[in-house]
Amino acid sequence: MPSRPEPMRRTEFPSGPWQHIAVGYLGLPSGDYMLVFVDYYSRWVEVVTTKSTTSEKTIKMFKGVFYTHGNPISVTTDNGPQFRSELFKDYLKQNGIEHHCTTPLWLQANGDVERQNRSLMKRIRIAQTG
Image (cartoon, rainbow, N blue to C red; front, side, top):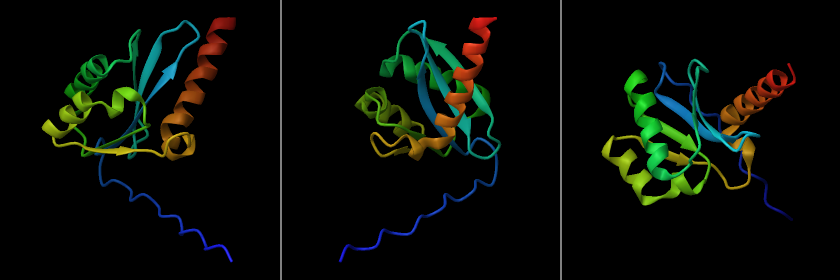
């Protein structure tokens, strides 16, 4: 008889804005990318466009957004190579930021970013047809 799956655990709701955020890349039809930040508390979205998704460029964009909002307690990302690099891990560690990676190939695990990406792509397609 197969074992029962573990019950789902809800993520604890943050007590304030910009404590826990989700981050992910969105590829654009032009070949550019958007780095999308979503605050778990307020659902506020920050978007930075780029032509490169290297760890160095990702860290630079993180610094720009964190300069405005402050460093969060934790960041949740997918398992993209830029988020798994030692350079990126060191950056987060030096700034006291916990890093949570989602399950590979399971987009629902980073649902807030995926939902925002779907909404952003819809708006981009509408803008391109106009």
